[in-house]
Length: 328
Image (tube, rainbow, N blue to C red; front, top):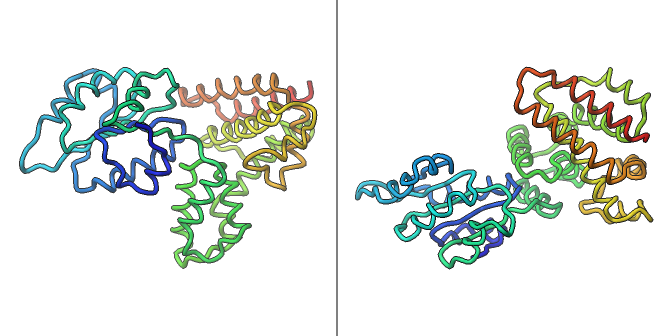
């Protein structure tokens, strides 16, 4: 059976099936739903498995389900990183589930996925797609979480929104920081900018934009002036990828009227960035964007898999490559 994620978000009492499969690229949404599961079943014993553990010992889940004591709490099972390999184990477990429930969490699953198809068609299971958030869902969370705070002006709301960039997981982190910082429930713009670390973010974003614009002089100047932090290498790569994704969306609409394409973007480009973005969109073709996206993908793998490489040097080299390609 297929469930819409927002229905389960708004009413977690709907967890009445034997098993649920949450899949998709929205990690923040999956984390929110996981918290709702734990909240609804807080009186139960929650057991967390990773698929690889259950594959290695295929009767482990069955044994845990059958191992019931009159003096123990009912068990709720959370299984991480699942794919089609675990389907047969789940099929075997479903008939013996009584008051226990199983919640599975997966990355993106295409329509050919066997486990997705099984959960969508089953009357005793639920399949929940966790698609990326949009401007409406992010701002709705902001308004709900900060409804008792003074100073949530359109300017402050946009500051937070632009900083998280449709990333729900990052939004949750920023909301936690805001609630701790503004204990008096009064948001002040200057303190909010410092809290969100906007100065550091703006410095890199300015460098990124000059590189994408192909401005060699300003790019070289900013490369020498910008303070890079090795632990933020993934943030730098994500910042570049986010802008490339927006440029790709514009070019995919066609080349006849770039500015009109930009006006049709959802969510819209922040007004302060619009002029710079228009110049970039005119320079970056789909083939150029694909070229750099391959470089950012390979760099991200290097950064995550090798702790001793010079991350700052590699990010700087990437920016130089971007600047050179923008002028071709």
